[in-house]
Length: 77
Image (cartoon, rainbow, N blue to C red; front, side, top):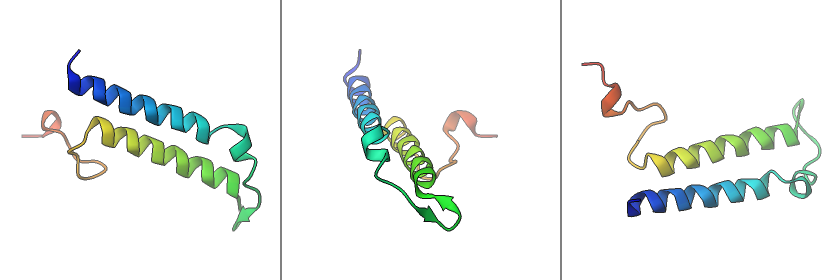
């Protein structure tokens, strides 16, 4: 396995382990209340979930500049 892939897998493993800790019950039980009409817990869950997805994308595609930037394979020429 190439070194670059090993580093990528290690980083993704660290992000996965950190997300397990973030989405664990003791931390999630701290957030009570409402933001407008929405419960803080729901807002927090979706924001953290989006953050984990974007971090994982940044690890796997380090040179993508936008959220929906086309890769060279997807260019419509």
